Amino acid sequence: MTLSNRPTNITVNCKAPLLEIAIVGDWLLDSQIPDLDLILSQFGDGTQFKQLVFSTELLGRWDSLLMTELIKLIAYSEEKGISVDIKTLPSGIQGLLSLVSAVPERAGVRRQSLKVSWLEIIGNSGLGLQSDVKSLIMFIGNLTLSVTAFFRGKAHFRWVDLWRNIQDCGPSALPIITLISLLVGLILAFVGSVQLALFGAQLYIADLVGLGMTREMGGLMTAVIMSGRTGAAYAAQLGTMQVNNEIDALETMGFDPMEFLVLPRVLALIFIMPLLCLYADLMGIIGGALVTVNFFEVSLVEYLQRTVNAIHLPDLTIGVFKCAVFGILIALSGCMRGMQCGRSASDVGDAATSAVVTGIVFIVVADSLMTILCNRLGI
Image (cartoon, one colour):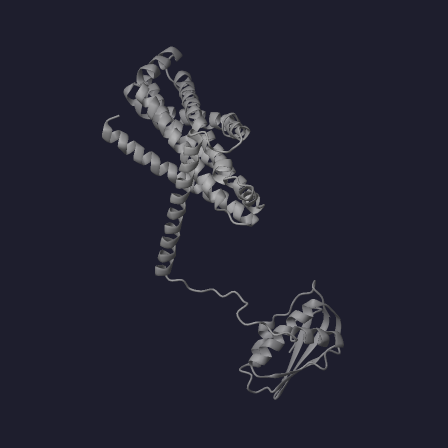
């Protein structure tokens, strides 16, 4: 029975108890592979055959393709209890087959997919959460000691590192803060105008944009941007130092990594986040002005007057305070994940990703709690 009329084909001669397979043509990698399922189906349950032999008189050129298919045939025959005679194969193939079977496969080396129950998944998640909470508490405690040492004038770090970190997370972040805050102000103005225009109260778009930016959106969007930009950078920097054993070298020289590496980064974000929040508020108000003045019958002077009358000092203070808290959380998550990084290059990427996720979760939870607290206090 010829299974293929291509240059590469196999002919099977079934005469129990002998099973003869004739290999015909050139067996090269660019040839079409015969369908072995059709050949293996001739074996049946294997009880009617005792021996498998090969006929290679019409075999042309061959390479590793023939070896791959022969290994499959021989393995299947051994499963069926059929002895295999390879003496008729070329000497080169016999030598390669001997090498294949020379060292048996070690048991347990193949990856096995294990079914994990939902109870085990929940348990592992709980244990992981417990470990993360414990690590967070320990990190906060060590950071508190470093901050205390800073106010006492006993912290050991380089001031040039503090100014460099302020430069990286401050002026260098202004372009992206400008773009996002301007667009957020535009969006707030457009969304508010849809409802306010129904009552002819387009002038109150200024109140909506001003209060929305100063109390919530300005600080929140700044925090999200800085979490993805600076928090990930902190984790990657500290993680790379962990991989290169630089942190171990600092400890060997008597430097506390929390004071020398983490403290300047935390202080930089604490100092710069309130300023970025004020800048984001300004950009959002300007974005709202672009929409209100150009699309509605409101002059720029009227818009500015309504904004000044709507925004009070408590509103501005709440937004700045929230952003300062967000800065602490971003620095905390980025530095913590960086210090917990493993010793491989992939662990650095995992640390950066985890820093962003952790930072955003902290920001959203903290913002919700502070908003509820302000609402309860009537602020």
